[in-house]
Image 1: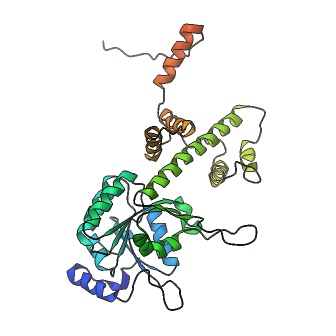
Image 2: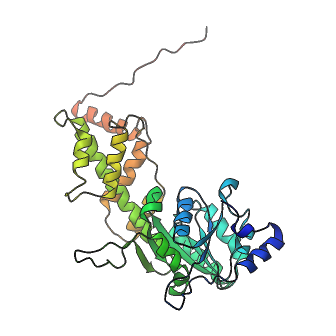
Image 3: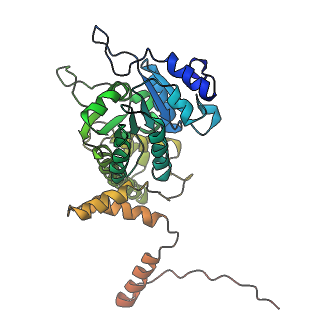
Amino acid sequence: MSRPGGVPSGAAGHRTARAAHRRVRPGHDDREGRTRAVQLGLIGLGKMGGNMAERVRRAGHEVVGYDRTPGRRDVDSLEALVGALSAPRVVWVMVPAGEPTRQTVRQLGELLEPGDVVVDGGNSKFTDDKVHAEMLGEKGIGYVDVGVSGGVWGLENGYALMVGGSGEDVAKVQPVFDALKPPSPTDASGQAVPGAGFVHAGPVGAGHYAKMVHNGIEYAMMQAYGEGYELLAAVDLVEDVPGVIASWTQGTVIRSWLLDLLVRALQEDPNLEKITGYAEDSGEGRWTVMEAIDHAVPMPAIAASLFARFSSRQEDSPTMKAVAALRNQFGGHSVHAVQSQEVERPA
């Protein structure tokens, strides 16, 4: 990608870029009610961020992108990114959650001006949002948190967006949300279904909280599909396991996009022989279970799916060793002994 408008580097370049873009007033409508093209500063152009930038551009808006990787970015620093945008600026942060996001938000707080808005579209914990909003609010800078779902398919299909923040700040980002979200589906009568794929969930923190619960549900769904697959594969009676999974994608009550993706995975590797059964967790499943405990909400399915991921990382589970030993002690059930290996002793 080329630098937007041929923006030169350095302080002079920042002033030139800012002047060149004064004509763009993000979020304003023309006299015919059509949303004008807006600007978006986007930090983090990886698998998600890069596709999001492209989708926003396809909608007719301008994106000024920054990434630590030189080949991906339009500008070479956060200072240059801020300088290339006209006020009121909207800067979307799409970097790994935790300290990378916290550091980026702090830096933006030193560079932006009153009336600008910072959007955190990563998988930050909702408790970080209040801290960021208060820090930026002291400087008159708005803050919006967005839970984003859609993965690598979002470029073509759109992204589901769960948004937290004030109505005023959300309105400044709305043209970008409209570009990113999926097309509105229609009901049986052909009328568009309002709100599908986008929700202003509440004040700051509500967006990431909603995404946290979304991911907890995702854990449980994936676990159920995985267990069903294992049982089908464990019996001799079912001869076409991938075919059975594929048959569930139409007309059944368990059909879903996740199921479609499992079908795709089985088409590429019918016996899943190319991968190991090690499953990471992003943190949001843990936070969901912790919140359930704090609010006394029973979540046995989501909790079990989280713990199943922990079990997947143990090649020889100590827990299952203890279970096997206990079964042997109280019932005389046989155990599988560890195969001894000859150890060469020094002479």
